[in-house]
Image 1 (tube, rainbow, N blue to C red):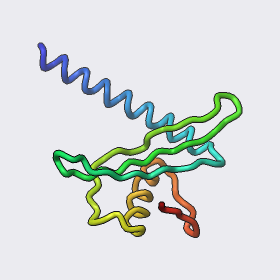
Image 2 (cartoon, rainbow, N blue to C red; image 1 turned 30 degrees about the vertical axis):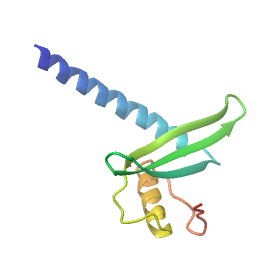
Image 3 (cartoon, rainbow, N blue to C red; image 1 turned 135 degrees about the vertical axis):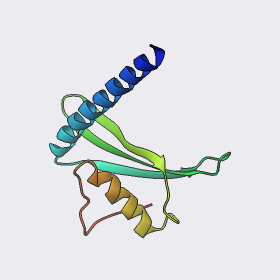
Length: 107
């Protein structure tokens, strides 16, 4: 009984995730302007590196909005510009976004 309940909860969480992800993709696709932030850090105890990407935009009705699109282990060999761009493009692609090929700033 207990494991059956856990399995049912797990399925509901997956369903909610997919529904909310679809809503977020629809929202993002309607944006004409947005900013992305990419951040990297290493967890000091495990020494595992992570990469995160968030999207930010402003609207007249509710103001400033931020959504975290990814926070996962960073498996590329270093944080040089080519790898940062690859990480960023891979995350954005999962949300049907792409960055302008001519412009990409990494600081």
